[in-house]
Length: 373
Picture 1 (spheres, rainbow, N blue to C red):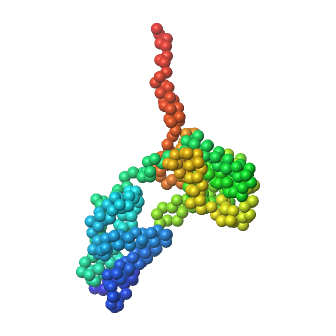
Picture 2 (cartoon, rainbow, N blue to C red; picture 1 turned 45 degrees about the horizontal axis):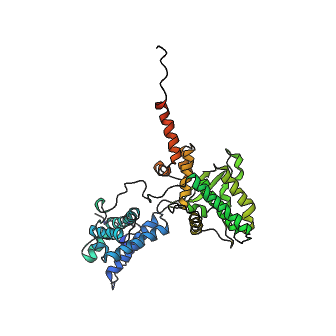
Picture 3 (cartoon, one colour; picture 1 turned 135 degrees about the vertical axis):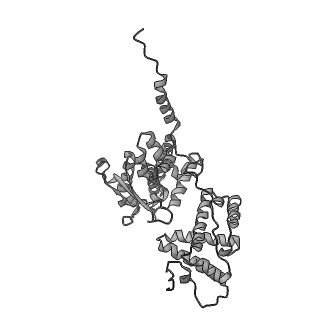
């Protein structure tokens, strides 16, 4: 009978542990080898570096919190840690579940016999890691939406006030002959773009001028008939998802076309690819978009529940009220599941009242006269 050959899986214990060398602190050396192995295993699966780094940081925080080595961790440690995250750190359930998920992945990696970490711990310390995350001590994903309940879209009147206010800042800057007139014009157009194409803040920031293209089915929009979003929200550990958003709001197309052709060149950044450029020749960052949004919202005394994302939310809501098919909207905003789009489908009271009257009309209509009488 031949000897069983160990599989050289990325992250396996025999690849990370240095044999024949006496460690001054063998427990710490084992932990570092485990973390290196887990990093190698994730890298071999093609996960993004920032995802791997965030997971490693989370495991090290749990290690510090428990003050125990991984082969001594128990489900009780997860209970205590989760309670601390809830009662002391006041983190959202979705955040805690994400943390628990990362911890579960590390724990499952250690106890997977193919990688040999359990045997290595048994040989070195006379014990081995066990599963610590179970259904009964982790948060289940029961709801499609776990965001803040107060979050909502703009009403049509609110979004009109906001965009009008943004336009007013341009006129004020021009009248006062202030240097910020170009930036104010850019920001006013940027917010119209977020609402007009249903964009996220980061997606907006990373747009380039060349991301606009023609749509043969909508020649009236010229070179602005479609928008190629290259930095859509990514799945965990995966690269950004791309999507094409078809232009549907003619006034938004007019605003962007005017900005690109008549205003952006005045920034003096002809060689910069960004759609939204700064006066210093850089790209507008998401944090800057948020800061300007908050300044305008607060100046108008609009509810603080409204965020930049509310404009994207409003895109879905208002087009739904206008009778646009939800499947089309799902593709436009880049939702993988229809349930995600459904969360955005809040309709206004006026729309609901109109639909109610329409639904009740047959029941409230007078009975036709009986011709036989």
